[in-house]
Length: 176
Image (cartoon, rainbow, N blue to C red; front, top):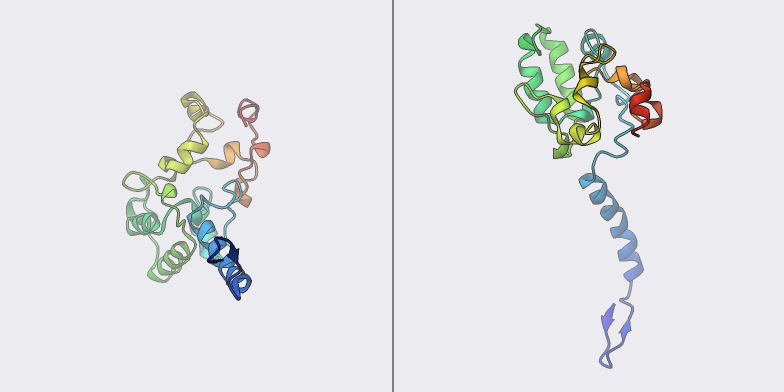
C-alpha cells in the first residue's frame, strides 16, 4: 500500500499479484528453517537404493537420513572401518551410492546435528529434547538396551513413525 497525502492508504497497483507470488517463497523459507516437518514422521525417502537397507539395516535399523546432517553422514561414511566399534567397510560403488543418498536426504536443521566422533544421532539437540523424559534406567533396561534401538520403544520405527501413541512400553506411553 502507498501512503496518500491526506494520511490514508490506497492499494499498490498489482499488489495482490505480488503477494500471491511471494507467498510460496515465504512458505518455503518457513519450512526450510522449521524443525523437521512433523519429526514424529521420518520415513526413509522413496528411491532409497537397495544397498541402504541391505547394508545399513544389517546390524541395526536403517536410520532415516533426516536424523543427521550431511556433514554428520559424511563423517560416519568416512570411518566405516571403525563404525561404532565394528568394521562396516563397503566396496567403492556401494559406498558412493550410499553417500549420495544420505547427502541428498540429510537434515538441513542444525538441531539434528549429531554430537561426538563419530557423530551420534542420540546426542543431537533434537533427540535429547524429544527423549528428555526417558530415564537412564530405561535406556539400560534389557528391553531397550540402547538409545539407538528405536524399535524397542517405537513400534513403527522401521516405517519411520515415532508417534507417541505408537510407543510400545507402557511406562513411556503415559509420558506422551
